[in-house]
Length: 383
Image 1 (tube, rainbow, N blue to C red):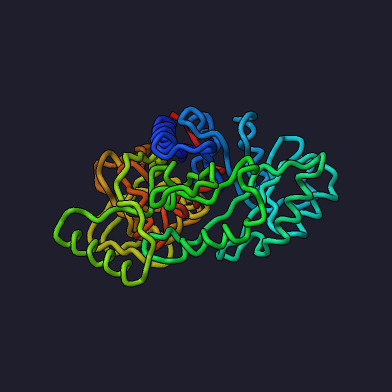
Image 2: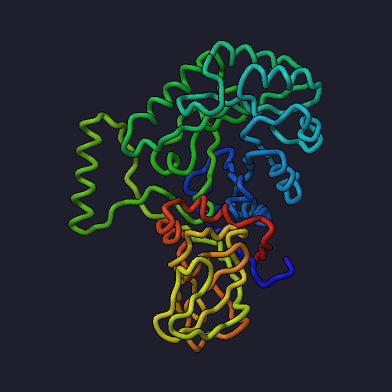
C-alpha cells in the first residue's frame, strides 16, 4: 500500500485451475485449501474459486477463516488446526467449522456451550494432530452426534506421503480405516483424506466424498511424469522396478495438467546509479564493480519476503533479465542493469518472466514457501 510494489493475481487463471480440477476429479465437496493467505495470493481469489467449482474452504486458523467469510458466507469453512477455547464464540457466530484433534479439545468445545460444527481429525502416521485411538474417537463422535448443540460435519486426515514411490500412503489409509472402523462413515456428511498429490495419483476411497485441493489451484503440482526422452524412459523404468521390489501400491500414470500460475510480484526502479570500477554496491563489500556499471535500486527487500538468498538471482525489467547484486536489504535491493533502465521502470521480481519454481529451486525451497513468504502487507491487485 502507498507504493508501487504489489502482487498481481490473475483470477481468470485461478478460476481455470479450479474448474479443471473440480471437473476432472469431482467430489461432493471440492475443498479449496486457502491457508497461508491463500498461498500468498490473498483472499480476493475466493469468488474465482467458487466460480470454478470449489464449494468448501480449508484454513489454518480463525483469522484466515474470518478473511474467507468476508468474501463467502455460504460455503463451509474448515479450520484444520484446533481453535483456542477463548475464540470459539467467533466460530459459532460466523458458522466456521472447528477441528477436533483430541479428547481435551473436544471437552473444551463441549464446555464452551456454543453451537458448533465439528471436523474430527485422525492421526494416521504423520504424528502432528489427530486421534490415534479409535475407541476415544468413536466415543467423542457419538457424544457429539447426541448433542443438540454440536454437529459432526466431518472426519478427515492428512497423509505425509503421496504413495508415488513409498508404502506409507497405503499404510496411512489402512490406519484411517482401522481407527474409524467403529464409525459409520456413510452417516458423516463430509469425509476427506486426499490432498493434491494423492488426488492425482489414486482413486478416492469409496467412503470419502471430499478432497482438499491445495497447490494445484495455484498452478503447481509436485508430481510430474518423466519426459519421453531416452533418459526419461529409463528413469521411469527404474522407478517402476524399484516400486515393484518394494511392494509399492500401483498409482495412476502421471500426466501434465493445463494448470496456470496466477501470481506475479512487481516493484519499480527508484534510482539508477552509475558507478566506477572499484566502487561497491550495497552492504558488506559483496559486489565490487570491475568496470563502470549501472546499478538500479529496487523498492523491495527482505521485509517484504524477498529473502537475502535472492542475491545473484534475476529480476526482469523491460523484458530483459538482470541479476540482483550485493546483499538484499530490508526494504531495497540493487540490480546490475544497463543504460536502458530508467527510474520508475516496472520490475518483475517473482512470477511471469521470473519463474516461481525456478526461484524456489535456486533458494533450496518450495513454491509454497516462495509465494507465502511475500508479506500480506503488500497489496494484492486482482485482474
